[in-house]
Image (cartoon, rainbow, N blue to C red; front, side, top):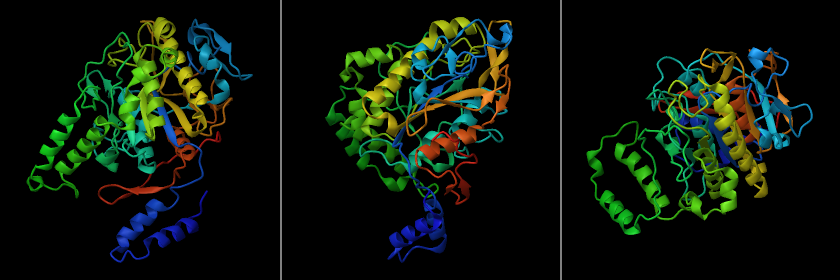
Length: 454
């Protein structure tokens, strides 16, 4: 780790001649520079989010010794790593176990989707009445990574796909930049191809649309009209005008529409058909394919939902399996996840990108030991499993464990904040770094500690 003294000397060197630097500004800039750079391998990150709460029993932590009413009807299979077993419906991922670090002891106290998603994406407990898009929210891990990693010219610092997360019609908080400000909000990009799941997302979120046939003249003409707007009509809020914020995103969208690495990455039809088939002809697989293409194009971090539809009490085709849990997992969810994620790892490895691309798997929580009267498993934040791959992560291992019945941590309990600290460590970000919100208040970016898997 780079020492405080080294960072201080480097900062002072770079500050010589800045006569207008006030003491508060100096202290703020110095605090943000201290500890923010550490040796690392990962240059980019793909966050695979299994929306709704993926069951640990029917994925990375089967319980063959638990009673039948807890372990369920599925079997388990050996992986490529001796001693690590997965659910029988993850055969492709079982062959990738040497690349995976499985964390089986994550837990928190929040049983609702909004709260569970918030703590997993931000690393912070939800406090008070959190609201979507509020600047009082803690920044998402996607936004925080983009704060420290510069994108390739012509690309945004962070992208999320293929739509915002909702719970029964209400947009959930935690996907944006919060107090970091709108500059670090991930750009919403809809996956252009791939058959949807059975449930179809019906929300009209504001998103960037990259239609191939848009005329260059139309874009440039519209930019000319924007340039003629009278900026003086906009009032200033927190040092920036609404027009300036609009112009920031308008220019970014125009750059991408007129031919940027992101525009080219978006054209999935240019991909080798064999690679597209490897990911699968569904929105989950094509979203992960686009994620690979985007980080390859220079986007530092991409958040990809590997599920779809509204969280409609478990009726949607997502991981919130309150009803018909076992048929849904066997026939749809696990095959899609197994095929698309194993394709992502294979693709990254074939291209020599895996060591420099961190892949982290997040979800809301696990599922209950008890199967309910509708044949489903309900929300269970008491313990669940997450995973890492690439980016300097040591594969072929597990960290922590759940107890015999999968109810609570059995050893080395881990918090979402510890997961975040591990991500930051792999991405070369010191988790002790302090940043300032728009009111000048200091915040340490993470309260957890990195897991010993790097």
